[in-house]
Length: 352
Ligand code: NAI
Ligand code: MG
Image (cartoon, rainbow, N blue to C red):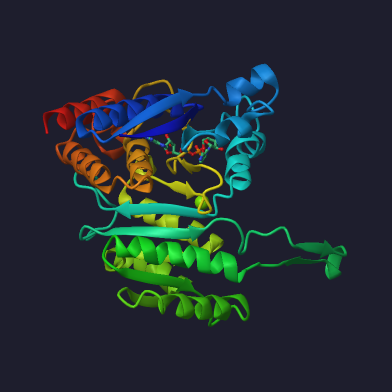
């Protein structure tokens, strides 16, 4: 029996509604599946915690988290109570950075029962693998002069280590899927870093001859995500390109409330963190109508990360059966509450 210790941080707003719902589903899944077991421990770190203690998490918070196999997080942010830059940097971004979660994985697919804004989504099913630690989001650069002579320089940093790392992750993932990797480049316009990106992609693909590859310039690729998302399997992208692509892939799914994400630590020194794409949604918090699908799907990503692909697949199947049947929250056109959806998923898992 594999036992996984999970640090649960519901956070703020709807995080406190969707996280308990998803934890319940994961418990039932472990129970009916056998072979693995979770030990959940909850931490109240949030904006309310800040209001009381003057910090988003205790000084030894990271030391505490370090001992867990994974972190399962809801959402952080309550702009009425704590400015966003304090809440995000004090918890989420701190964990991502300090725990070297260098890769961001965001799947997107057309779910049955969820209307995509595309007229012809053709059951697309793709994953964007985004570099999460370097690239365009560097602190290197500066500003000079004022007035007419004013200037700003921002350097993009692409290391061979970081570039290879994200590409290998994408190829390994593709081997578990439809064996197709698309590279997001812009070597026709960006003079140094993107030709380098292309070269590394060529080097890495030699080790994965069984995987089909192609390469698109980011502008064309962004258009294809809208026009024909179904031609993609795994897409590997730099930090900025991946950021933009995943907003598009989230949008074509139909609601931000269903988009899952994983922040992966690949050197094994620290836990990875699993959190949905959406935020704390203060506008609907406390009403019991938040969509739990993003959080539940995020739980499936965590299971995949632990190597329980079959259990993850089973969960996704049941989740989609439930949306297909119209048991869904208002953001995707339904009339059900958060718990109606998660309870129905639990019921069906038990029946299988
Ligand atoms: P948001 O994602 O919280 O909400 C955007 C819109 O989507 C809202 O209308 C909301 O009601 C809706 N929505 C989001 N998740 C939903 C769900 N599961 N079910 C149904 N509807 C859902 O983004 P917003 O409003 O920009 O940010 C609110 C707070 O969340 C801010 O404090 C922000 O900093 C924080 N935030 C935190 C993130 C994180 O913890 N990873 C990510 C994004 C925002
Ligand atoms: Mg973004």
